[in-house]
Length: 405
Image 1 (cartoon, rainbow, N blue to C red):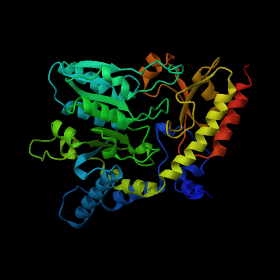
Image 2 (image 1 turned 90 degrees about the vertical axis):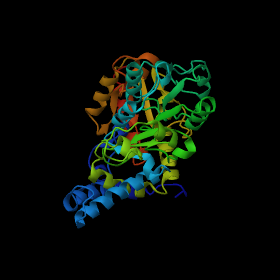
Image 3 (image 1 turned 60 degrees about the horizontal axis):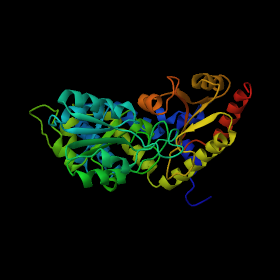
Image 4 (image 1 turned 45 degrees about the horizontal axis):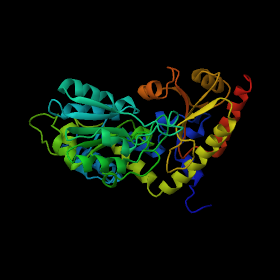
């Protein structure tokens, strides 16, 4: 076994649902949960299901568990406890941020046109409410394959940034294309031009695949959902000191307004789900090199097959399997097939669970890629998938595609 190879028996044994008959390849919509996550949720509900802050024994234990969950989440991304808040979803957390920001009329927002709507709609609404200038950050189409592989580049920002820029938003990895953006370069470019501007990043499609260090990235607002990262259905938001000082509190007037949780927590996250987070961080510790290596093998197997077909198959995003440029969220279309039709034909006679559609990135799919409501076929893999599973999907796809030539 290679030094960075995962123990796949141990990995797959950590996810009870994988013992069933379904083969999960819709992981960008939500990963399977660790067995230890479910155990911690159950234990909390059965032994410490009380309000936080009480002085009796069960109340003290509940509070300690909640605080330990928060501490694990903050440490996991290289932040302090006061710089993070846990909420129901990335969508909700970004919406909360939009109501905690107060800019001046005429200030400018730069919003990515290829993101999930969670990182678009709050800022469009904010611009309308506060009479701000909304600038769309659209990918450059200079490269020959740009129409099928649009990317956000730091160099694109020169024409958009001004002294009035207050917020720049983008995705770390596209939930359609799988493309990894150079967030560190983007953040540096923004801050060099305007130190007051905030850089807000949606990391939902990136977080299941790579280690995160928000300080190294230089971002100001950064969010992802734990249910995409083998955990419960809650999300995490980080705010830099600059962002934290910029955000107004949405909390009750009589409560503290110091930490990000104070300002945006709004009655606290689900206690039992926060208690489950240390199970996720413990599981992932020391596995990142192995995860990247395993996922490279998975995406190489699928992409090599797609790239070799050449019979009307279009890969949307990076055609390379290099883990430096993409994660194993692979989208494609096939000439002569509607995406829904193809997915449902394969699912009707196989155990493979994957999806079709726009996946809340409607502006990307329709306006940038020029596709219909039917969208793409998306196969989204994570480290607990196996090469044999991918080969099985390929065989199922070949069987269905052979019926129409």
